[in-house]
Image (cartoon, rainbow, N blue to C red; front, side):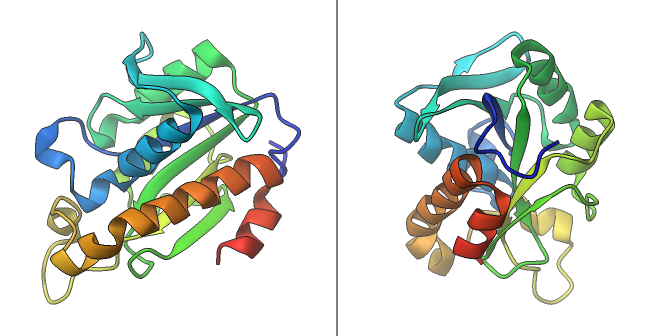
Length: 192
């Protein structure tokens, strides 16, 4: 897969999260929250698709994109993502997800790499048969004390975090848009 998305025909942008109102404000759902912002930018509403994901098709700064929220739980995200890839045949895939190893709202982008214990990434890598997809990692920080990280990511953002969350979601959407329109290196330089 090319390091530069700017020349690609169609980019599939996947936001990771868990379906249903119970999980809406969870740290683990940051991918869904960022995709909601991107859907507003392309002027679309999510609709059920036979791939097993909620889909919006449109243009982001002139580039063709498909936004996808798997309707499965996080640890089964790979099936809907692989089905969307088979249906839409994107030339690039971007996955937006929460990252425990980054401070709150830090944004990092990369191509490939391991799953770092993230079950959604593990499922996608297994279903696609490759680690070579772009990642937009949104920091949610590690829990303090002895709280289990798996429980922590299934909790809502703190009151303090929620006060700046809308701004940080907007910034993460900007970073994703830069990745799609300007390529990885330019996006990394602009959002680090």
